[in-house]
Length: 252
Image 1 (cartoon, rainbow, N blue to C red):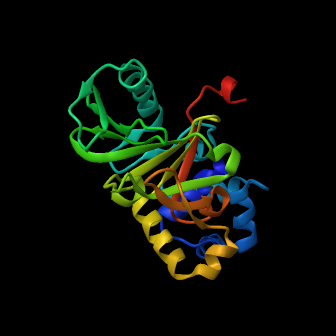
Image 2 (tube, one colour):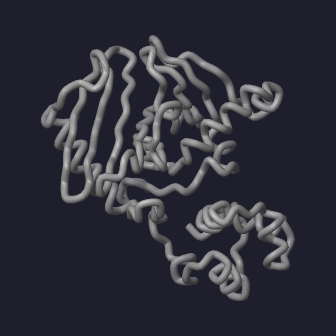
């Protein structure tokens, strides 16, 4: 979506809405409306945005499902196809099991071409797990967190501890986290380093955390973390972009 790409590339270029507005000689309110999809920039401003962001106008306006994760040039569509195969070849069919990496964990691995998939989870009543994808030997390029409840609660779950181990966001060295809403197919691409910083700041500013409805919570046996409203996080630099992993017909 055009509005999501404007948000993504503005943040990628480390610009505030005010700074982007100044460079384009428009008001901050105009930039806000572009980014929320209320209005769309005309051809004059599309040309300016294209030049400023270093991408083509065709790319900006094209209704594709994804942005490129540029750290290691990963195409989201390519990654999703691999993940579907990997999940079927591991947890779904209970095949390709490997040695446990943590006490009492169940670990699976799958490899195809230059991608490697690792899944490590605890299969108790209160399920928790971690999925990682490597590409071309790069360590923890992306990590996947699947959430069965976020579509109904409207919250991201930032897990600090799980089974006495640091949680997904707290320990990962991945460049990106793909936060997957299973029921809807929505996938939010988040920056884990910035997410950790964001939570740390919220711990210090409890009044602001309450205002934004960010709250500490138990997440099952041995787990603890924070619930962060999706709409709140989307307005920060933690959020990079989003796409839908399911075919458009199913998503509709």
